[in-house]
Every structure is written in structure tokens, then in C-alpha cells.
Amino acid sequence: MQANDKKVFVVIPARLESSRLKRKLLLPLEGKPLILHTLERVSSINAEAVIVASDSEEILEVVESHCDRAVLTSKTHQSGSDRVAEVAESLPTDSIIINVQADEPLISPSVIEKVIEVICREDKADIVTTCEQISEIKDVLSPNVVKVVFDSQSFALYFSRSAIPFPRESVRKYGSLESALKEEPELLQLFHKHTGLYAYRREALLRFSRLSQTPLEKIESLEQLRALENGFRIKVLQTEGSSIGVDTEEDLRRVQAILRK
Image 1: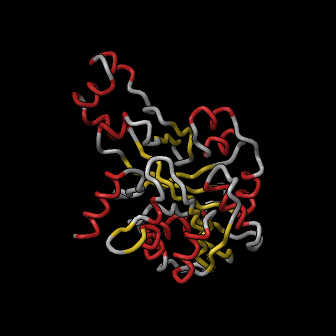
Image 2: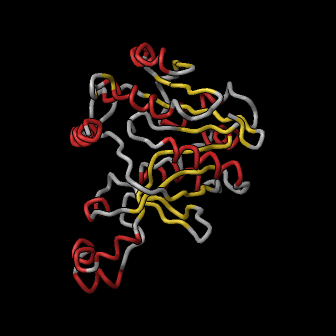
């Protein structure tokens, strides 16, 4: 695919080991490994190539016939973006790199296409990412759900595992954040969940990957804070619906139920 004369590549970082759900990308889901569902979802994207980047020959053997390229990458990468950057080194200058999480078997191809459209027209954005409005109190309270706040032009101001923005007066009134959200459910409209889809300008991604980890990145364990701390501009695209990244057995059961329907 070429958008505004820029070549677009979809790269899926696929690490074998995971902390909360062991070897999740190879777990069976409706008769085939989870990662193949993700690949099928992105196969309709009109990109130059769909590339799986993994630290595991076992994963590469599973995906080789389902993607354009399967690349064995270093086992020492600290993040998915670093793995994608290794692949980006060999891709054309001035191309657009779409980082799709391998554990999102229900990802919407139309959302990916929208992200491509935004980064190609938004000259001020080094990176484009996505978010969804949070609809459940438990997601606001969970440190496993990353929240994002952005400015009037939808550029990210901060990402956090904490509840941001914090409704101070309502919390003072009701005694806790949970109570405030129960008593004033309209407060949920303030909160947005960051979802793991990224579009990078190739040169921005390579520059980002060469930077050292930053203090905020380390304390929150969120690599996108490294970008913000170094002056990168991240455009946040709010999407409809709800994505499901598979991190737990519960997530796997939810996706299984949806696929069966």
C-alpha cells in the first residue's frame, strides 16, 4: 500500500514467553493458534507486506504460510517496539510502520486503516496510537488498563496505569474514587483506555528505539512515556467499540465466546 507516496508495512512483534499467560500466542483458539487469528484480521489491509517479527523459531514455523515475511529477531529486546525497529532497519526510508499486537485476535482492520490515514495526513505526528472510552469502573481502577489523556488537538499529554484525570472534588465528596464513579457514573466519560496499536514514521521509530529508558518509563513500565519524555508527538485516535488483548485466561475465554458467536 502507498499512502501519499509512503509505503506502509504491518509488523507484528511476537514474543513467545509472556508473564501472565504462558505461551499465549500458540494457545489453541477455535482450532488454531491465537496468533493466526490476528494474522487473518490484518490480511485484508492493503499494505506492502505483513511481517511477523519473533524471538521464537516455533512461532515462525506456525506463521510462515500466513504472512509475507517471518523474521527471527533478537531475544534481548525489552519491548515490542524495539523488536519492530529491528525489522524497520531493513525497510525503505520514509515508510510508515504499523505495529499490531500479536495477542489481539479481534483487532479491527478498519481501525488500522484509519490509523494509516491519520499518520499520512498529520504532518506533526511522529506516532499515531489508539484509545477507547472506558465503560467499566473496574477498568479505571485496574493498573493493568493503561489510561491516556490528550490535548484539544488529540495529542497525548500522558499515559498512566493510575486513574487519570483524577476527579478530585468528587472523590473528596464520596470518600474514594470507586464510590465517586458509582455515585456519578457520568465521570466514566473522562477516562480513556490506551490500546496497543501504533503507527510510526520509520525514522521516528528508529530514533525512539536508540534512546535509553527514561525515568517515567521505568516507574510506570510504559515505553510510550520514553517517547513523550523525549519530545515525540503522539496523536491519539479515539475508536468505537472495544478491543481485547489476550493477557489472561479470562481474556481467552471472552475471545473464545465472541468467536463462537
